[in-house]
Amino acid sequence: MEEDNSIQLNTTSPMPTIPLLPSQLVVTTIFNSMESLRFPSIVGKVFSGEQAESRQEANLKVRTQKLYAQGLKNLEQQDLHGAIKNFTATININPQFAPAYNDRGVARYKLGYKQSALQDLTTAIELNPYRAKYYSNRGFMLTRLKDYTAAIADYNSALLLNPNLAQAYFNRGAIRLQMENSLAALADFESAIRLDRDFAKAYFNRGVTRYKLRKVQGAFEDFQKAAGLFKLQGQIDDYREAVSRIRQLWY
Image (tube, rainbow, N blue to C red):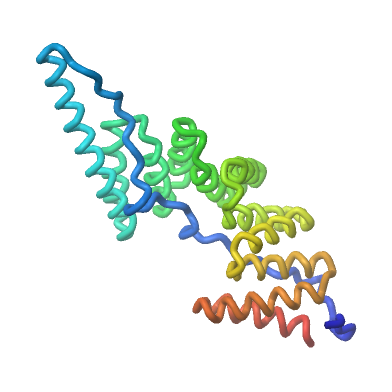
């Protein structure tokens, strides 16, 4: 398909990108992400006092697991205050349990407590610096606080640990696009699409990026692809936005 030379570029009206939503925070799931609680291993005991301590430790572990699981259920049900209460109780029993800090940070962020949420994610990373989702979540929060350089650094760390995170590529690309680094943004959106062929927002933002780079035909095709996916996925507002961009390029 040859480029239609009649298409008029509108360089004075920048196209908006698809925004990041709070729902894109990665929350530990109830069913398959319960992480082992970090209590010391129990070795063979000789004295009855040590046996009692062992039983007490086991009881604490069971109670902590129940509190953490309840916190996850609260979070799933959008009972954010209940989630914070149960995650805090988990942390009080076991201050080394990084997932509780991550999930409490998510709940706090959703309630608008951005600084305390950021501190929770920082603590989670300090306790376990090898979990990509902690960096990704903190990167998301830093983006909302407009600390773009730090956010990109966190997404870099997340992708170093797990290079298969389409959402992390998308989020980093959105930051780079906002910072007018269009070539780097284009590479990130292409990576997101490579990992997830149905990632409608990545097609849309790649279309915006291509438009900025004067690649009109590619932008047109991306908006068409995004519109089709948005419609199939029931994202009507985004579908209408994509159709608007198609009309802008076509007429």
